[in-house]
Amino acid sequence: MDTSANPLGNNLISRHGATGVVCIFLCILTMSCTNPFAPKLSDKLPTITGLGDQHTVEGIFQNFKYAYQFKDTLTYGQLLAPDFTFTYRDYDKGIDNSWGRDQDMLTTAGLFQAAQRLEIVWNEVVTSIGDSVVKDISRGFNLTITFSPTDVLRLNGRVDLRLRRPSANDVWKIVRWRDESNY
Image (cartoon, rainbow, N blue to C red; front, side, top):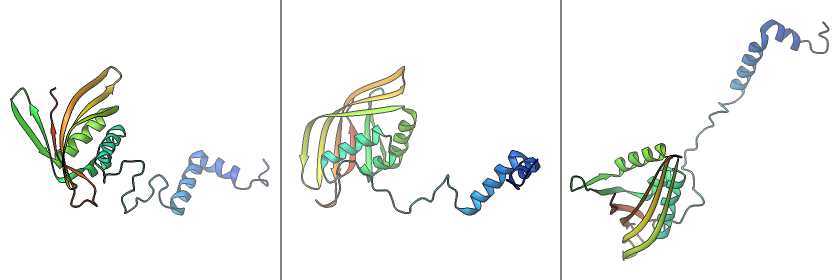
């Protein structure tokens, strides 16, 4: 065999086999740079583009829709105030149940993981009362949750939201969400 054209190639493969070549390649790759399959994460939170302006009330609803559509817990979390409370009616027991922001984030993350697809359509605003820093809004919605092609849940309901912001220059946050749906 003539090895003058490729003095290392044939001998390397014949001595170590294909496994040896792959190992050498991986060693060179790992020594030459950081892990290419896990690039360094930024210390800054990403700027989300293509979303609604949360300085407006409509921006809150656009971002809510975006968070559900893309199952984006980061965007969803940016909608909720630190002292957020979710309340719903347990019609079987005849009582209201509530939970805070942490439990709501866990519950929503579970929904995002369980669903293949989520689609929320915001309907008419029934009432909107407030000023430039606090607003109470009641609004209808249609929510479609697709767990699988044969398991689709369609819900129609209404939410009563309290939005708040420190000043008219700040973004709105949801402080209170009362689910007025009758499931």
